[in-house]
Image (cartoon, rainbow, N blue to C red):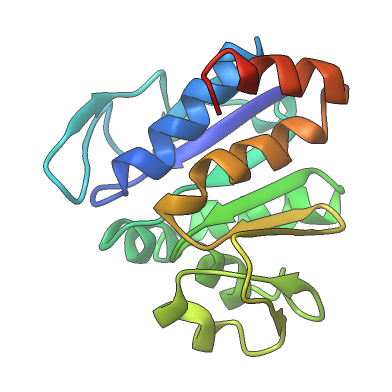
Length: 179
């Protein structure tokens, strides 16, 4: 299994990096992909070097597609037509689609959350107009995982890992970080 996370200027660094870190601790191959730049600045002015640029990727190599939240990062993700088309295609292919905080609004904007249980940062729940909005930290419905924000980042990563690893391996990873 191979995962990727998309980074746009203004992403929430902890939501992104906790998930990347937890997947890497579990030996899951995950690439940090910059939509337009190899160095991407977060909403709190933390810069991170990406593994790859969007235009250099073969997305047929990936099974899991992850969006971090943050503002204006989420808006920048939502404004990227390449990304929206890719997410729709991969959703249709039954790949795992994941979004945290404000980023579920990106999925809602292209209909991926229609009829699904979903959550997001509370002030973005109104964007989930065709979803069954849940007041929970993290929820999975079919091949879509959504989470409510930074405080749910570890649970979000755990839910992703639970889809690809056996329960004992997931628990071992989380015990090693004293979770």
